[in-house]
Image 1 (cartoon, rainbow, N blue to C red):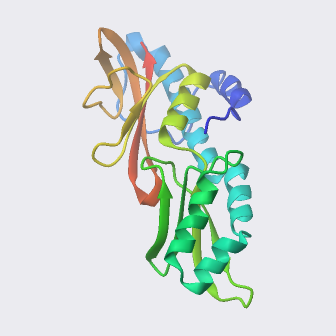
Image 2: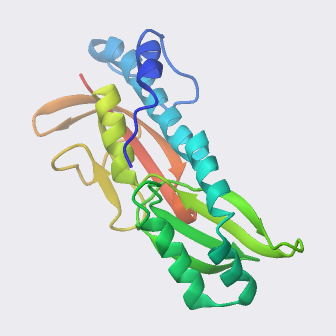
Image 3: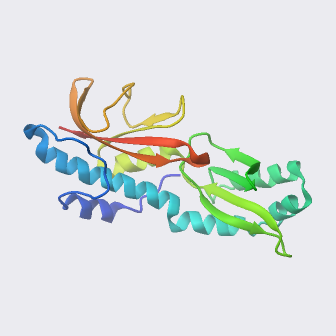
Length: 216
């Protein structure tokens, strides 16, 4: 899902000298110092966008709505795996709700997990039966990583690469390099960039690294 909740944020952040919390070990060469300030700012914006995708109002509204789904609760209460999967899939294929992945976990056991493979971390909500019994924890994400990459690139103009588990990579670049430094500078296809990076957590606790590439 592609949204644009951060246009004002990007414009405001561009005027700041930098953003706290962005990992930028080392120093850039003098020729790229000014670009380094902009790189810090854009990496901070990218990090805030990710956190909004995970913890923003859209996700919380979605899990609250799904938690009231009677067919889902009935399947959980009755221990019916086929009905549970069918209810979860209906959430994915609801064209107006934009759920990209949904799981229910109970006492460490995943009861159902449907949707995309490379997805940002979910919003969460505990599920209870009418009598108060624990039915598990609902986890639902409204954004996959490719949507996040497109959103950051469109709002900041910076290049972006996100890598996760083996084989999981999305990028705004046509051919992302196999390796990138955590910070500093690099050259890709003849173009110089100032690099910033930060860690994030994806769906299922997948460890992600996000690189922001600002033209030098």
